[in-house]
Length: 287
Image (cartoon, rainbow, N blue to C red; front, side):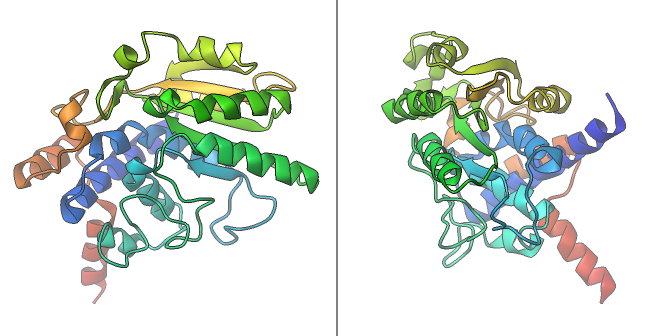
């Protein structure tokens, strides 16, 4: 593993610690879903996405659609880490009038491309956006981060057909395949079928990777697009609650809120402090 991957892995542990603290402070669930996609978000926002915190709405930016909106603590933490929002805002998660509600809202946080949380919409929003940008002759890329559970939705496959018909080879869909959804195990509900095979049958090109390996994620992103005139997909095999042993692959953590003991154990395992608590300490020392 190279130095940059090692640095990003440490950053991922800090983001996970921040997600746990936010869930605890905000008294909100969906923590395991956030923890499973941290490494993907870290890889995207540290070298792949052409986005600039000083010009978040630049017309030529890459468009990133966070379709699995219930996992938003991970997105908020990464946006803060990359300077799109102040770190101090993180402590307001899920509070009244916060820019960080428990599902992302573009009216509360304008740096977003779209509000999300109603699953199955992100890929359609991205394909529509890319179609319009093409008409305006703006040559940019779009990335959608989806959950495996939302692949139950017919709207996902309608959008997949449209993207393939339009030869959208600047579109990338990443599926966070953590194996757990609201009412059971994803494989059981989807009939133990292959998402990779499904996307390929719909005219896409792509691969399946270890979605908890920073180096493997970055390696796959470096190969985008996977084929000319075809939209691309990455099936990222992850684990719900990744990074915290007593939360991993446990469906109860799809909804459970961390207790005092849960918070202490999780932060001890991660060995990192939450971003906004570390910021508070730094501010106090500077006074």
